[in-house]
Image 1 (cartoon, rainbow, N blue to C red):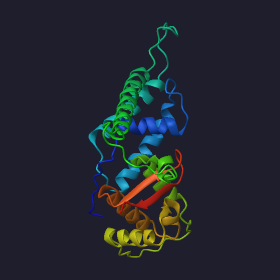
Image 2 (cartoon, helix red, strand yellow):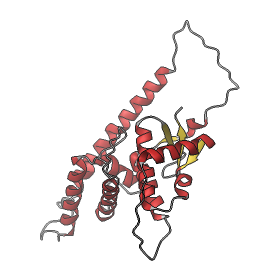
Image 3 (tube, rainbow, N blue to C red):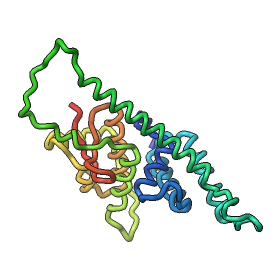
Image 4 (tube, helix red, strand yellow):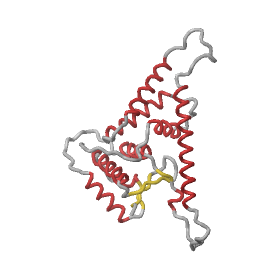
Amino acid sequence: MGYRVKLDIFEGPFDLLLYLIRKHEIDIYDIPIHIITRQFLEYIELMKMLDLEIAGEFIEMVAILMNIKARMLLPRPAGVSEEDYEDPRAELVERLIEYKRYKEAAHELSRYEDRQRLLYPRNFFPSIDIRQEEEPDAYLKDVSLFDLLLAFKRALDNMPKVTYHEVKRIDITIEQQTTFIIERLKRRQMLLFSELMAGIREKMVIVVTFLALLEMIRAGKIIVRQSDVFDDIRIKSAA
């Protein structure tokens, strides 16, 4: 397509592994490498389809997963007991747990910083309307790139299945689909991702619409949130 998107929200390979572990409710100490490797490669393919910039760390992680998968297929060396046998996943699990600890600590520090912003000096007492209702967004969660990719995959999977193939040129641009999203948001305060994609029948239009959505997120034009993990994504104008 000749269009490449680079996002500040782009996360690394360990974020994707933790996302997949959470998605499948997997015990981090007993990772089914064949499932995780297949899912990881599916996300890499989605990124390639969208022409997203894939950091070298993702390719390195694919190599690590494939290496672990191959080692687990090998028979255990003769004479090696259960206690002495080194699980090929051990090093990856250790790195994952360490990364998870740092990520949780960073998140806690960020929450602490947000709380500190709400504190005022003793000599300043703003008037607060106690009847004011809490913003609905207070109950929503931030959306990661992997949540967006999962929603994109669902949109592709939900496309009508055709038994014939007709070659035709589809002239569609990111600018056009950006306008399309803006117009939809003018009519409604909040739009679900599934609703945005529901009326689209061509795969290329879905791809370009998704790229337009990513570009609008990067530019700070829209906000995306979820009510719960793996739930439908809510889209709102940032204005």
